[in-house]
Structure formats: C-alpha cells, structure tokens
Length: 621
Image (cartoon, rainbow, N blue to C red; front, side, top):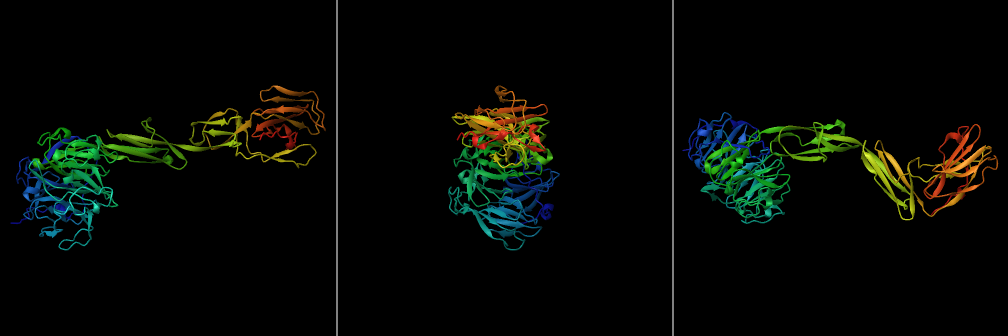
C-alpha cells in the first residue's frame, strides 16, 4: 500500500545547497544508521535508525536526503539530526535522488528502470523509461542527467519537467553510442562506448554507475564496467580522467589515469574542480586533484569492514562506498552502502587573505575560504607599468613566482608586491661593429648592467645616452668668428667608457654603445677664430699632453695637426687672461667629432666651436 509517511519541508524550498570544497583525510564519524540492515527509527535520532543499502545522497538547506535502496524509501535527516521518510511504497530500489529548483524530487527507480518525479503529496509521474539506474542535476538544477539501463547511454533533459506534464525540453544523448565497450576517448562522447548499463555485486552489495556535473558543465561518469571515470567536457569531447581500465588497486600519489580502480560507483566534484570517486570495489573514497591529476585515498583502508569512527578517515574501514555529497561547510558525506550507514568526514576551513602592494600595482586571485590540507594557488597579475616582485607573509618573502601554489595549513595573510618598471633601450653604433645586451623592462631600484661586445677588429669606445641619430654639420654659419655650428648632434653625453655599464634603474633610458675600427688613425686641423691665445695645449683623455703652443695668434689660427687614435678623445684648451676656450674631439662611431662640453665658447649667447673641416674627418669605413 502506498503511503506518504511525512512530507519534507524542503520540497517547496527553491534553493539547493550542494556546496563542495576540497577534502582531505581528517576525522570520520557515522551520522546516519546504526550499522544494522533494516527499516526503523523514523522520528528519532538518525544514528539510531536502520538503513538498508543506502546509495544516492544530496544536501538541501542543511538536510541530508538519502535513497534508502533496499527499503524502497527516500529518507531525510533534518538539521537537528532526526530522520524521517519522505516517500514510501512508490518505487522499488531507489538508487539516485535529486531536487530541482521548483521543489520536484527525481528518483532513479532502479528495479522499475525509470525516473520518477514527486511533488507534494501527489502521485509520482513516471519519466524516461529505461533511464532508472542513476541520475543527477547540473549546478543550476535545470538539466537532469540520467544513466540508462540496458543501453549504455547517458542522457540529458534540457529543462525540468513540470509536474503532471511531459518533458518540455529536448532529451539529448550526452555520452555513449548504445554499444557496450570501452572506446572513443578524444572524440565525440556520443560516438564512444561505455559500460554503465548493468548492476554489479560487490561484497554482496548491489552497485551501479553514477554521474555528476561540475560548475563548468563537465560531466563525469563512473564507467563501472570499464573501471574508469570518463569526462565529457562542455564541447562534448570524452576522455578518461581516472583509471587505466584494469580492475584493482594501485596508483595513489601518481597520475590518476595510471591508477587502478575497481567498480567505481560514485562521483562528485567540488567547487575547484577536484574529483571524488566512490571506489566501491576497493572500499575507498579517492580524490583526483584538479591541478595536478594526482590521485589519493581520502577515506578507507581497502578492507571491507566497519570501523574507525572518531579517527582519521584514512584509517577507517568502509564497505562498498557509493554516493558522495558535501555539506555547506565542505564536509564529505559517504554512502557506506555495505555497512548500511552514512558517514561524515569533517574538515576544518581556514581563510587565505591576499592583497596588493601598492594597491595600484596589480590584482590577486585565489584566496578565500579553504580546507586544511588542500592545495591553494594564488595568482598575482601586475597592472600596466608594473612588474610582480614576490609574495610576502609578515614581511618575509615566501615565493618569487606570481602563481604561488602551496598546501593549506592554517590561516594565512599574503601580500603580492609589485614595482614600477622602466624601459632600458640599447642600440649599437655602427650597428655591425658590435653587440650589446642587458636592456629591456627593469624594476625600479634594481641594478642594471648593460654590456657591449665589439666584433673582431673593432674596439668598444663608450656608452652615450640619446637616440643614436648620426650628427649633422652646418657649414654655412655666418658671423665675425671663423667657426662652425654643430647641428643635429643627438647622441647625448657619454655616460660610461666601460663596456659593462652598471646603474640603478630610475627611469626610462636610451643608451647607445659606440665602437671604433682598431686600424684607423689620422689627423685633423684645428683653426681658431680672431682671438689671440696666450697659449694652448692638446691632451689626450688621460691628461697626457699631445701638443703645446706657447702663443697662438688670432686670424690664421692654429694650423698644426695631431694624430687621432680610435677609442680615445682629445681635449683642446686655449687660454687668455679673461677666457678659456675648450673643445673635445670624441671618436664617435666611425668618425672623430668635436663635442662642445664647456660654456667657455659661448659668445653673445651663441655656441662657437674652433673651426673644424668636416672633410678632414677620419673615415674608418
């Protein structure tokens, strides 16, 4: 006789809280069931009740809903820890259970081989014949995913079915071509072969395939007969993400695709994409890290038994675990099917706080509430004009990489440090006479070394700061003085005569490395304007006198010559009682040029240089 024992208040509540978090082995406890197979305890403490082969479970508003398969009942535990039956007598062997956004409950009624829909106190509506092995809803609770009995298919109904009506959305095949087997990875999921359509017996317990959908619309299938977990991505491509296809147990702490599973009958994902597997034949719950693909055991020792409550979950024994779910605090719940109980693995949550210094320097992500023992990855992204420097904690550097991954072990407060960057541009002149390195984007305050290397047969001369444009000469400057104005000289001043020039980054700079031909020598003629000089001299860059003139008459000027050697510069000083005339000959590039470095030649606000005949320049090409 069909009966409704108690209506579940959650049916009419529109929100489903199936919050998932990363989980690692901590304390395990039985929260539903006394370990004896049976049907009893409604209205009392859940731990005193009897279940009989529980399978699918989910959370809603703090209440745990259970498909109590061999009792042909859907049961729930309220937030006070008391158990009730929601529906009884309407189905035979319910395996999967889910609640949509309209308050409708969907049950995968295994023996009847169909999905049944319940709402309020109404009789159930039978949906999707031959799709009764197991089910789940997506994160939005608008798409129902079903595993079909006898056809090796996983299907999706695109919208929830209104009570009493027919499916108002398209039923789509998500995976499987209807043929039992194991093939198709890397291609369309609808062309792949699955092995999900049958019941299996494990340690005397009936187990079936399962399906789950993460918050990225990836569908995970416990391909129970192939001993693997398959994934169908949002583009419809199928792949194996856990298991190598051979039944057994191996591979912990290695890549999940190389591990052995044995009749996986439960799947769930957390909000970060980590995958949890009810590895029923191995009597364990296992986890695949979404970042690394590493598989580990989070509950169970591999022995089919019932022990370990109040201790570490990895030291406890399970018996054919199937359904998996998480509560709003990130604690893991396990349908310990063979032990006729629901067990809870408790995990403590911590806070990872992040900030940027300076706040305008960039942004951070990856912080928030985490589970102790989980893997966290913090990401620092610099703003334009800044560069990432490091992560610090309490002022102490902890990582120099912008993507900082670590194992969570308590609250942490981390700062991503950024710095202003400058551009150091370097060039070579002439371009074929040498090379230079060390330029690029540099952090403010950092030490920068630019290094110039001449090619064979050439010599490094100097580093100058400027844009590297070849200077031009103006031969038509008028005036009473014999002179010539240097026009378009854009190399700027010499900043170093060392091939390796080190400085502190404090702004954008444009540097040019100058080179000279080792085999080039010659002479220039210096003519003076109308001024008589008491005396004059020419020295080299080391201050060694090259020429000395005791008296230099004006008019005809100084007509004597001296040799110019590449890689050196020469200084001319002419002296009177009231003024010093100064000019320097710099070997810039493949010529020796005059560079005005002294204001002593400013007459009436105009710079005059001692006459220099550009035709006498030393051509070292």
